[in-house]
Length: 202
Image (tube, rainbow, N blue to C red; front, side, top):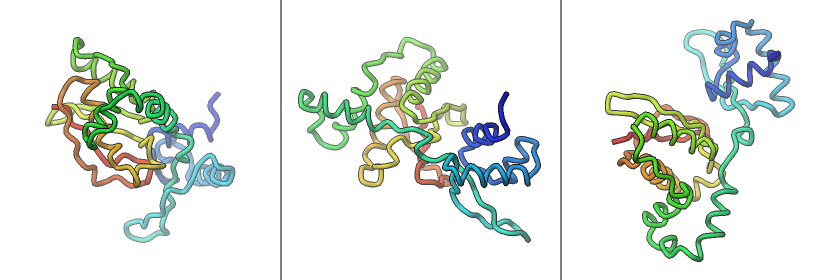
């Protein structure tokens, strides 16, 4: 049986961030009960307060909760392993930034070839592969074609010092799906572990 606290955690895993009021509405629980569970789980480290936002009209500002970054996982050990194992034997990794990121993406894809499959199957396979690397990815149809969204940046701990890893993400998707990919900013993104981009499949 799923406990009330596990339901709250599951809801935050889906929504990424939410206030007590939003969680209560989604789970059809009282706001007081949800606030109690949130207080306990913040205290024991299972959740964290992501931000505090003002409410329209009257009312106190409300806390916005999220899962801790550690609970979302990262891909740093895989990245480090590829770099330490392959860098010496792969000259492309010592080229300019674009070449390095494309070469690194190729190593991370392990030469997966999905080009024979229909586009929907390719998209599902790409999402599955990205989720093995803790991107919390999904794809959706859009007016300009399909797009891939990441719910989490698995390199959040180092991305400010190495923004070129976002170029690697784009190369990774492009190589896996065998189609050109265009990156666009997501203006609504907040939270240091969230990926600020949408990847459009061309």
